[in-house]
Length: 406
Ligand SMILES: [Zn+2]
Image 1 (spheres, rainbow, N blue to C red):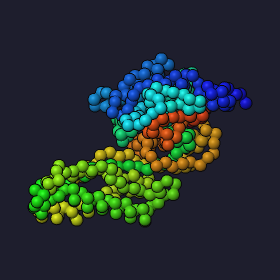
Image 2: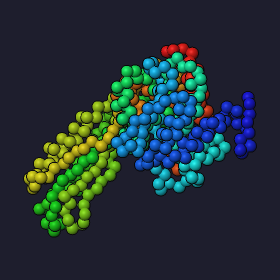
Image 3: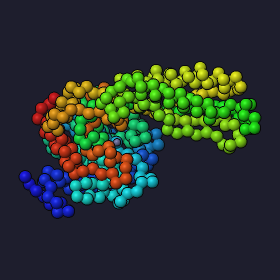
Image 4: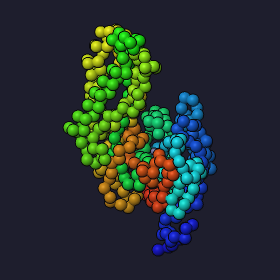
């Protein structure tokens, strides 16, 4: 086996050394601070320029402000389905995190590459971009589509604009690989998520006369206790899917706001809760249960004191669960690219795969370099070995789509 010395002098297999082209693209991508609150346009323009240098045209789909965009590009015959490689360009904030080095400067130490987004998921995007010259040179008989989104980390928001466009396309990709960090394991399922805001409208009073008001915080507390009971019931009675670390649907209250002073009966309280559900678990009935409790058990008592009191529910955001059959063609295909016959996996975190699969009907798997355990953390990294596995998968993808036209 070829051996190449690394910086540390440790001998590693030759295959474990990522190319300098890949490193340079990844360094560029990490250098754009695409924290979800920022514009991603510099990165998008960089990719657009890079693709156009290789003769590939990009379509940009902007948000309302014009400060963010999705990018969609096709290499090969556009009239055929083909394989979509998809990733989000935004990253989570580094605020309050202690990093050993600048999170927006790629740092390679031995067999690891550090930087915000290195695992989630600029490593994957860099691997895809690095292969573009080969994709172009290969005269693909089946196309490869590159789809990059914004605002994934804040609820898979940006990609919906791209989906609106894709819904109108005469031909959509036949399958998709979403390169979220899965350690290059093939993931076929993840939970779906729904976020809901609850606003409780009470009635103010001097706290010396609390019986004359309707305490919004106390009503919210009763509803939160009810949500917790629903959660405990699911925990006990299921449905269960042992493939997930938390093998059932979960409800969770994440934020509460209310009250202005201790001597005022609060007239407002709002809280946000989320439901993360198993793919097969219908959650509308769960939401109905919570709303019914508010309507039947809480609002009547509130309104006895003041008819203007009430409880409102607003849907915040959500994304569907992913469920791709383990024997679906996309799974067999990606397995062949990885030359592995390992079992498929399920993950607890969400991705855009569910949206591509449910809204557009594109069979999708999640498979990308790096580990979710490193994502979102200080000193996020991706290993060279993971990048190399991804590069190999993409090389085989290009070979396979230029050989046969399926
Ligand atoms: Zn991600």
